[in-house]
Image (cartoon, rainbow, N blue to C red; front, side, top):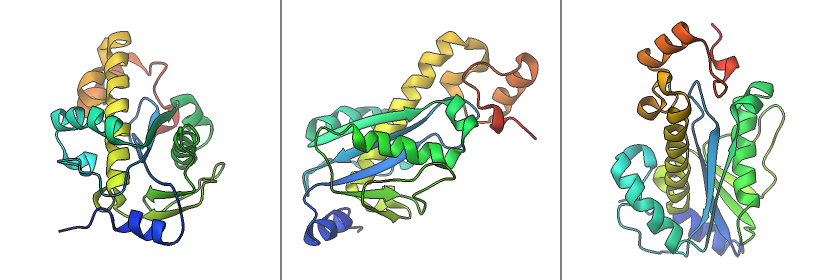
Amino acid sequence: MTDMWHYEREALEQGHALVCGCDEAGAGPLAGPVYAAAVILPLGVEIEGLDDSKKLTEKKREALFPVIQEKALAWAVARVEAAEIDETDILSARMKAMQLAMDQLALRPDFALIDGNRDHGRSFALTTPHCCIVKGDSLSASIAAASILAKVSRDRFMVEQDRLYPAYGFARHKGYGTAQHREAIARLGPCPIHRRTFLKG
């Protein structure tokens, strides 16, 4: 069984006092912002069912959302809008969203565990001291918690957008490039929350 606290424990043993996990959601969709969350958990806190958000059902993610908020020492969610993704690049936008989330934490982390293997894009780089962990959302409790907060927050936003732009079906596909979504774009053209650079080609 995976020790979900290995990386947090290691960072604390290296002298870091407050360690946060950070992850993003929504790098791939054709529409909507990219979201990120940062979470500082008490070491070893029990959160039943905590895992990579992609491995959980929507119902389970929604159930875990308030539990994570309640048990975390600090948590924050941030986003970078579609227009800024178009102006820069998705990797820079992902990094900026992560840094914004970390900067908004009520407690200042001195080290971050980052999901993935990248820490900078063409126009933005993380500034909080950190290490990147491939598949971190399956290996770190803090990153898993962040992945759930980011995913649920983004999904809720896209459901709200469905009410503004009902013809695109955002509540169903959350902006991802399904056949139904692409057909709606072809028929109606993009709406204000579409990522224009993602629609080319």
